[in-house]
Length: 341
Ligand code: ASP
Image 1 (cartoon, rainbow, N blue to C red):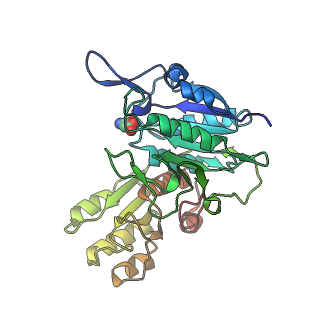
Image 2 (cartoon, helix red, strand yellow):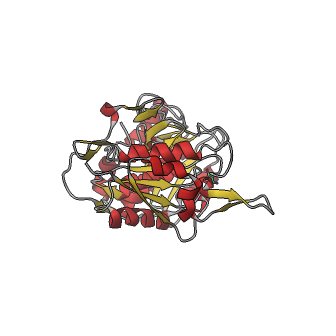
Image 3 (cartoon, rainbow, N blue to C red):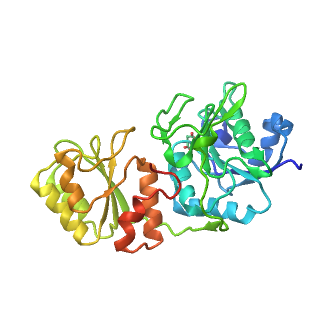
């Protein structure tokens, strides 16, 4: 058996940064020197190659153009590598992992996102463990096939399904959580893989990479006292084609007449509105309360237990794929990559 080939893709973020001695500010270091900085990587039973964004970015600058770049790196190297580890800033990592899960259709190899809270050069860094274990996860094989065949996110001893994650803490090493789906794996003395939760594609087709994301989308978070003028301005925004409506609890919203009428009018004009709960855990269930019955009857799409990160990227993806209006609701409410239950 040959050692697996793993491609490390450095996009930017704290993990690949060092402190500028003069200013104290964090800046990206030459990623090709990663093997010098973490010599332990050489001890892993795999062949590692690296590729870096020409100009590494802070992930606050992430956008669909960069998602397309990552997807294309995976596509171009798909036959030569057994697994991919994407080093990425943690701030928008859940968005990127969600986006990539949609862009990489029929993925049969691991694409593991990871990063760190402290730079790799820091004495107390979490970067080493995150990087080393991500590489191990991406290298796992059984009967000549990769064990993980989806986009994952590894952080602080846990592997999650990427499109189920949310960044929950800006300081703790445990920065991510998957509230509505169990961990895919845990790292302790042993790597413990929860095989029953891994994604298995029903299709036997080849990888297809789609990069047409449509960014004419938005997120509207409800709050008590939200004004008609504000909602009206958002819904009348000329370029808007899809909207995530962040509602309360199990998908509830104010029953004030003006609100429902505005949504109804927008939907009749072709706007796709998706109901996603502000709660981190649990699911939208329109019709459970009177406060969501009308949303259901006017044709609001149910996001079920999807995260906002997965919902907004799925919206961009489906609009980019020009899914016809007649099929849009059904397609959104269907799990495409395990992003909703
Ligand atoms: N601001 C950084 C980023 O997201 C934080 C990190 O790397 O975790 O790029």
